[in-house]
Length: 291
Image 1 (cartoon, rainbow, N blue to C red):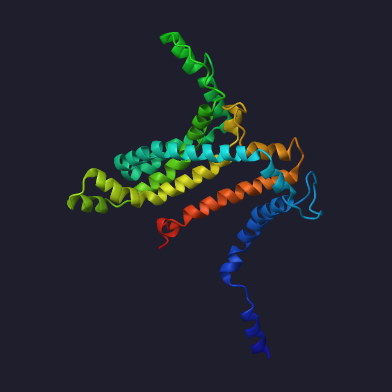
Image 2 (cartoon, rainbow, N blue to C red):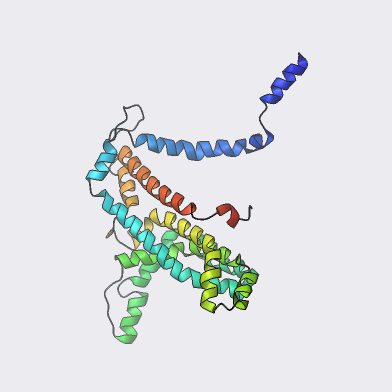
């Protein structure tokens, strides 16, 4: 009987790996899954209710599609995509130069780009306000030394885009540097020995092999840029209303939590689908060296 009991106990014993991961699983369930499920649940509650004890309804989603909220969503997605494209153009040559010039020290040099992250984002953006405002650092210098008096560059779409490119530059540069550094020199040399030109080496060898780093940088930057709000407020002066502003208003001033939750769920679904589509195009495990 004792042997049968011990065999039964071994059958239902929790594996050691699962026991070790249990604290992390509990943390993820309490800190991530539970709030996410609460937001999803609130999105199906009647407008202006503050509990989950009502009959589910699709009224909030109908309100979103019947109103002009989609314009805010398009602005957020469009400016995030523009930020990614601009950062690719800026960051790829910089990352390539860091890897080719500094070699194994490129990661250490790249850390210099992280120093601004230790300063509050709002403080850095207000620094750009002083730079772009009329009679500020830039326009004041042009007026004093060149007699040019252009209009203020603040509160424009260009100022918002400039702030987003500035803020999210490190998030594109780091993965790109890692991706380019993983391109083996042997592959470059082999292509050159086979008669490939410098452009062909870049196009056929370096760019495809560094694509996973580029993809990670694009995804990371896009997800962060879609959720941006400080750049729109500080540099845009509410000239452009992002979807995050509508979510904030719904949860605060309007006191319409179900509508804010529906907006958040819709944004998460769109971004999540885009990320999943992008992740299907390359092997993340291979890039991270897991196989």
